[in-house]
Amino acid sequence: MVEGTASLVDELEPVGRRLTLSDLRWYLRQSRATLVGAILTALFLVVGIIGLVMIAVPSLQHLYLDQDLSAALEPPLSGHGLFGTDPLGRDLLARTVAGVGVSLAIATIVTSISLLLGGVVGILAGYHGGKLDTALSGVIDVAWGFPIILIVVILAGVLSPGLSTVVIGISIINWAGFARIIRGETLRLRELEFVRAARALGAPAWRIMVRHIVPSVIAPSLVLGSYYVAITIIAEAGTSFIGVGAQPPTPSLGQIIAEGQNYWEENLWVVAIPGTVLVLIVLGLNTLGDGLRDLLDPHLRSGG
Image (cartoon, rainbow, N blue to C red; front, side, top):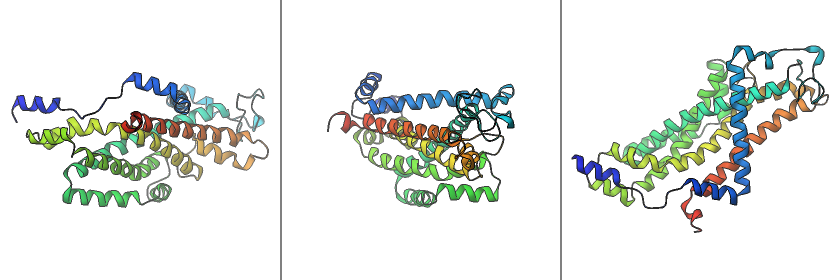
């Protein structure tokens, strides 16, 4: 393909109005639920980053590791920390913040792996179609059919319990969800005029996929990503709760809940606080995802 034709192919754009920052600001003012979701998600990111710093810096690890059995199960605002202490007398606030950091790290790693793998498979299957689509769709359906917790438990038995096993287990399933959505979107996009025009001009498949398909599937990937971050956080907490996820001394919201479940009658806060934080994180991500879906849907934006 000559240079002039390549330039013309790159100039082809999908028909439709692009989303701008002013659209986002306008929508956040109109949708209070989405604004609340955005605020909760922003708090999750800030607290998670603080938690990761606490875990990564050795001089700060004592904040969530130091034990004081004489001050075990102290209630919030008792003089032993804002959130009180856990059954071993450790600061519950510091452990919760560190646990949020673990959730953020796992969710970021798993979602990145799943999006990359699912995006490649989905675009290849949707764009090329035929036997390749049939083969890849079969792999997607098989992967999508397994429960996440079951896969992580099996891997924990084969490998060993831990966060690396959680990352592998959740990624094995979550990539298929991205692949299904991106494949469907690619099937739609490949029949649109701007993609047909690029093919008619002789553009190679890789250029069309990179230049036109990939940018066009970003919006649905962002929406799905917000949901899958929430799913990953729930799965990580669940696997840590049953003992195959985060291993001591690494804190996790699920692990903190598991450690306090036998003491909730004596001190409800040791379970209620990490449980509430987990619920708020998932609520914020899901609400933000709903808002992104509505905002990025051209039919909903245009009132049709």
